[in-house]
Image (cartoon, rainbow, N blue to C red; front, side, top):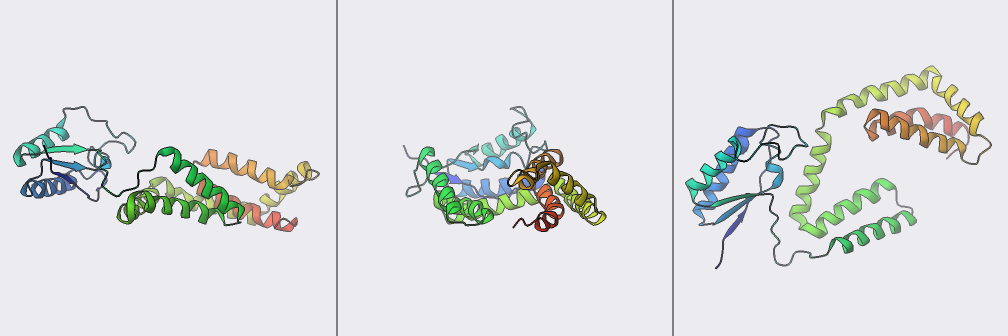
Length: 232
């Protein structure tokens, strides 16, 4: 028996239940017109529709209001609605998780040994793996969705204040005094100031919760002091 399946691709509106349902109904109607038996929606459709916290993907009990609406859609257009199903097409990459891990870790080591900057190493491997494993269209979609997901977090609104704090510490001379103290404590140790900076950055990032804010703030504070002491 052959089954005709429609894989739906749609941009999810965060917490936009009405907008997402309208898109889902449109796609479901089109699938019904194409005589499909099953329509598959992406898993993250749930996070954009349930109206709960971002990390609670399955916070609504089944059956619930949201699932009942989809039951009505399925009954109206005479097909099954599935969410979170990944369909593998002919010709797609079939590498196992072990091979993928070895390939990515090997690429990471090789690029670092060649002296490629870390930002290009991590970004290049991530983009290359997405395009290689899921194809150009899915890789580009994953790339754009990831950027939007990271940049759309409200916690990033605090980053400018942390940068402002770092500038105040640097301009007031407090940062120089702190680094002078660290230099006197760890000066005899080779690379002691660099190790102290790494420890401070780790503690700062743990307290702030945003590694980017810690990187920028500590860069403003640490870079002048380390350059003054012949670090390069």
